[in-house]
Length: 184
Image (cartoon, rainbow, N blue to C red; front, side, top):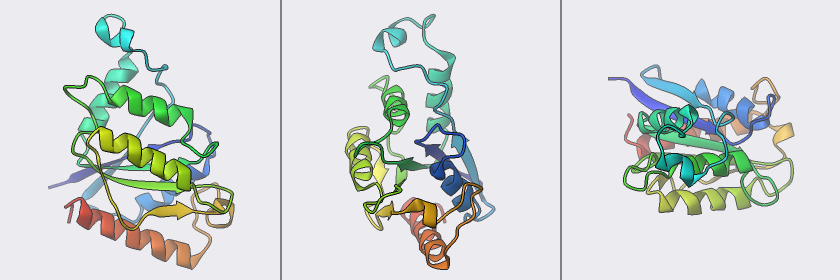
């Protein structure tokens, strides 16, 4: 039976390191795992009024919610902006949080990977994501936590991991996540 993992990339930049990282780790999964990248760049700003009237609700809200719900597990890969998560990712979390009776993230095992060009590796963003996702009943993998510092020295914009120790670490993270999520 094929299992599905959705990757949500927190950056909407075309050549972001988060997208490169998503591309790189997608190759670390066994063939029986189907990897889907879930778009967030087409989501209008969350507005609860739009959910009150189905004729006003953006199709992208429904598409995002449906795609998240269809996954057996999630991976969120994000840069850190101003010691927190990018606005587009926060918006996607808000969209997925409604309706409160059918939260898209509910019960999803979730791996959080953050990165930055600086030395803290997205520590603030990682913990803000954990805080938001716990309220939505996503089940964040507690260990290992993944903070990738000086990302420009670890991966290139095409998704090639530049250091053997980084690749070894990320392969170990993926293996642990598969076990945590009960997918192998």
